[in-house]
Image (tube, rainbow, N blue to C red; front, side, top):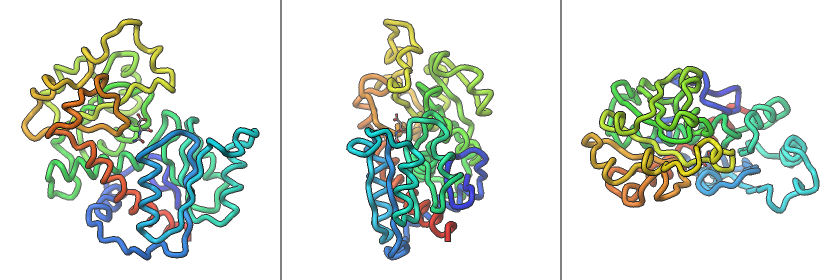
Length: 305
Ligand code: NCD
């Protein structure tokens, strides 16, 4: 999970590392001056709402100065590369750079050249570690488990366009490390058996067969910007087969929760009334995201000095 001061992915995450971040985030007794005098840059080459804003807010709540950079309006339009952009920003004197980029491996590449801490805020279809931490925190708090983030006996279905999803890849690693049983569910082109084999989790193609068993259903957006539209045959009724409808949600276990990393496409992977319903912890995931990003920024900058 950590590689020096850098947080690039959840691969290799162990329960102890995860629990130490989750404990800090859950306790939420942060020192508002912890990062006083420090500077954090957000380097977002891809669009974002919750991830970018929550990293900014997290850094500010710890007393750091924050600069928000987005590729729109930048010298990327003049041909500047990812690495040159990063080195330019870093040389101004930042302690941590939070990066999001459409290429898998972008954040890892930067760590080979970085002097500051690099935190991956999503690289292509590869990893999104702070989303997985936010999801684990929100799920643990929702299930009311007072047993040190031990998710054994908890079954989580991750439903939809898993093959395109960095959120799915990060969550499989972290949830499995915490002891959960994870099942990827979706149409075969979006949830190929090889993906389950590569990630070491189960795969299923019938949502109605899986849903009654789960403690959490994590719904994913179809990532059209990564070409996912081509994965399904024309006319395929995605919402009918894999959307979390009111009727399907009603058949879930008592206490089972509905999750979504956002952004949601209401009426496709999730019906609006379910997103807003009593099982939904979607906004709790967003709130948890601020706390885990505070814990991560604090730890990353502490590791970098
Ligand atoms: C996700 C992402 O960007 O990977 N959103 C997020 O960060 N909460 C998922 C998505 O875009 O569908």
